[in-house]
Image (cartoon, rainbow over all chains, first blue to last red; front, side):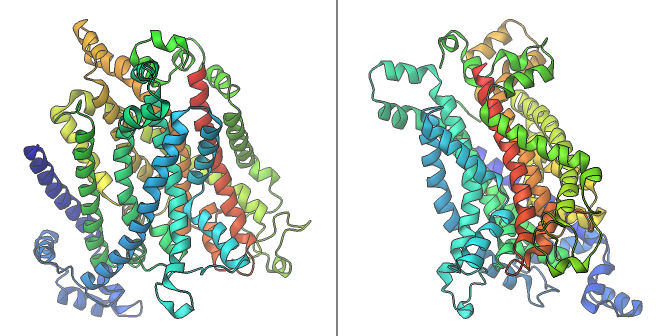
Length: 312
Length: 302
C-alpha cells in the first residue's frame, strides 16, 4: 500500500514535469509576443527586440525552462503582464475565490446526487425513478451558460430578486452571500444532473445482482437491503466520478465565473490565455494539474478501500 | 428483473444487454428502430434530434434570410414579428436564419468528435485493464497527462497555436474525451477480469483478444452506451462553451454559443437575443440525453 502511494506520488511528480515542460514549450515557441504584448502594438520592432533581450527571452528554451522551474519551486512564478503584479499574488487570490465557490457547490452537489441517485435507482422504473431520471437528464443537458442566462433572465431581469454579477464586493448594494446564490445554483444544477444519473445507473446494476434477491428472500426489509447491501456497492463505480468533479470545480468553473463576472481562477486563466499572459497560464496550469493528479490518487486509493477485489 | 435473467451468467444479467443489440444478423438500422419504438423517452429525444437534423440539412433552402446579412433597420423593432419570426439579433441579423445555420455547425462537429473518442477510448481501456503491467502503465500515464490538463487550457493552447477551425475542435475534443472513456472501460475491466467466467474462458484456452472482446467488452456496454450519447450532448455543450468564451469557430458564421455571448450584454434590454440561442442548444442536448436514456431502457427490455 505504501509502495503504491509512493509510486503514484513519483508518477505525479513526473507528470507535473511533463506538463510544465509541454506548456512551457508551447507557450514559449513565439517569444516575440511577450515583449510585443508589454509594449503594445505601436512599439517599434527595435524596442521589442531590445526588451526581448532584456527579459532574457532570446536564450534557448531549455535554459529558460530550468531557470523557471528553479524559481517556481520557491514559489516565484514571475510577473503577470496583464495584471502588472507578481503571478503568485494574483493567483492565490483568485484560487481562494474559486475554492470558496467550489466548496459550497460540492457540499450541495454530493449529498443531493447520492440521495436522488439511490432513491431513483433502488426501484427501477418506479414513478419516482422516472421523475428523477427525466429531471436530472434535463438539468445535465442545459449548458451552464444557457442555464446562467435563463436564471439571470428570471431572477435578475424579471423578478429583480438577486444580483446578476458576483464581484465579491458589496459596492453594488448586494450582500456577498446573495452573490453566491446564482453561481452555486448553476453549478449544482448542471453537475448534480450528471452525478445523479451515474449513481442511479450503478444502483440499478447492483439491485439486479443475485445477492440482492437473496437478501430480500432471506426476509430483510427493503430498507435494510438498500442501506446495508446495495448502497455500499453501488457507490463504488460513481466514487471516482464524484472525485473527478473536483477538477471540474477548480478549472471548469470558468463558464460560471464568466457569466457572473466572478473573480475566480478559471476566468483568470481565460483572460490570461486570450491576452497571451504566459506567466499566468504556466503557473495556473501547474496548479490545476496538481489538483487533478491529487484527486486521481485519492480516487484510486478510495476505490481500493471500497472494493477488496481490486488489488494493486 | 425477469426470470430469464436468473438463468444467465452474472455478466449478461448485469450488463443490461439484450440480444437485439448484439445480434450479428439484424441490421444496425433495424435494431435501432426496434429499440427506438420501445421507449417513449427515446422517441421524444429522437424527435428533437430529427427536428434539428432536418433544420440543419435544409438551412440553405428554408432560412428566410442570409444568416450574416446586417440590417440595422431591423433594430427598430427587434422582437419576433411577421417579418422576422424569431426577431433579429443586436446587429439586425435574422435570428431564425442564424439558429438554422447554427444547427449545421454543431451537428457536424459533435458526432465526428464523439465517434473518435469512443473508438479510441474503448480500445485503450480494454487493453490497459486486461493486460495490466507495462501496457497499462504507459496508456494510463499518457491518459493522466492528457486528463491532468484542464480542458479549457488545452483548448486555449491549441486554438491559440493552430486557430479555431472545425478540425482542430474535433481533434481537441477527441483527445480530451478518449482518456475518460478509457478510464470507464478500464474500471469495468478491472472489476470483471477476476470473475470466475473469465477464469473459465482462460482455462478453455481462449485467446486474450477473444476474452477482451467477447467476455469483458459486453460488460462495458451498459456504461458505454450511456456514455456515448451523453457524450454527444457534452460535446455539443463543449462547442457551445467554446463559442460562449469567444474561442469557438470564428465569426461571423453563426454558432449558438457565440450568439449567446454576443447578445449577452443586451439581456436587460432585449432578452430574446440571448434566450433563443440558449434554448436552441439546450433543446438539442436534451434530445441527445433523452435518446441515450430511452435506448438504454429499451435495450434492457428486449
